[in-house]
Length: 319
Image 1 (tube, rainbow, N blue to C red):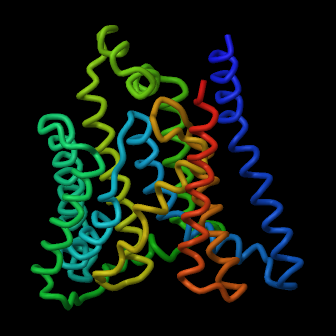
Image 2: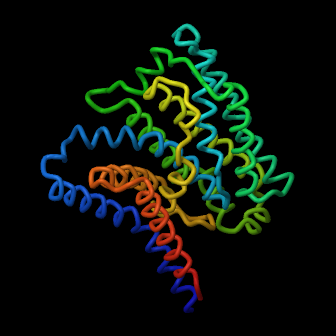
Image 3: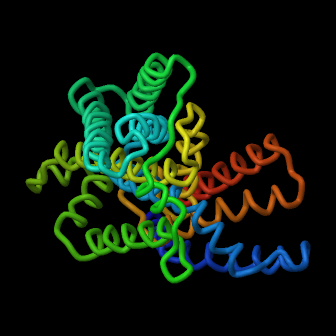
């Protein structure tokens, strides 16, 4: 009875987490307007949404992987690899955009498939497999560019990364559109129910006839494709090829998913909490920058937030 009560409590917390996170974001916005008068404007919030869009798209893929009980540390390197080969493949020409997009799509599919094969058929732990993929892709990028990438994005990609639709950044529109599509799949389709089942109880899912391997493989491929989309957006925004573009996207996407209510053990979570978690992370970084907090301080803050969220989740699981 006590165990069931704790599970019900945990479920209620996860369902309320997006609302709690939204309240925290509103309090942060209010605090910023008080601490730094005049800094809070609609344009600033839209800029933060544009900065959050790449992280948010990556976090959507990360959330699906976490949902089936995995983790993907290769998303940042996927972004970097797509950035470099997007620049190379398109050669700053709109006429080469289709070929460049196919090249980037192929990269995403290969990275996702490699992760899936390592996790499912070689029985390598997801953390280890995706970390290996990260180092291999980093090596490929450094060898290919000889440590000095050059070039610029095609005009079409620049427009996607920097343009606006009725004042709202294209990247934000794409992010929210993908989020709505994923939400609909998880909420209303058989595929969504199967993903929750695989993450919640893999043995029961398998006995009920669900192909666990196919769904887990699909989750890793989906994560890589979301990182590919984010890489294209970031390429258009920065307009350069860079070996540092991967940044902290692996850690930040994990943080956004966990803060948004996705359970680290899988089987529980949603989409809109992840969207809010991504915006929260960017808003927090913007506020810390505005307050003069160093990069070290930002990393410590980020680590503490992840620790706190996971600790609460584990405490609620205890019998």
